Image (cartoon, rainbow, N blue to C red; front, side, top):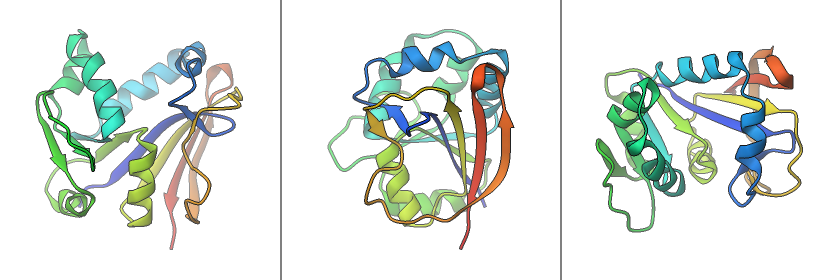
Length: 180
């Protein structure tokens, strides 16, 4: 069975970007060599990406025009998009799916499935018990506003810490697995 792994870069106050225009400028300041190595290795571990509509639309604007090993990997991977609004999956290897189909995706042969950000999707999948691991890069900044990864009213998800590793420039890698 494949695992669904959530990866997110978050500020200390849980912001993942969204409405915060300065978020990515702040995040990139903390991309030391070890963080970049971690992200590259993470990208080459799964064999599929799972995204919500907003993340998909952002990635589909950025990645197809990029070059290099990372771009080739992202552009060639199967991409599954969960959305309740109409969307044309125009980026190569993209398929629109619903939350119910994700359990079937996990049963198919293959490697892990990676979710980049996609807070609304993660909330739905967490409630359905479909998330197997959270990999969070916590950055030493407080944004004060913006889209929160874990929003109020989401419900309780019990997690077990499986790794805590300080990285350069004050970034901390936290890995959690859901518990019963």
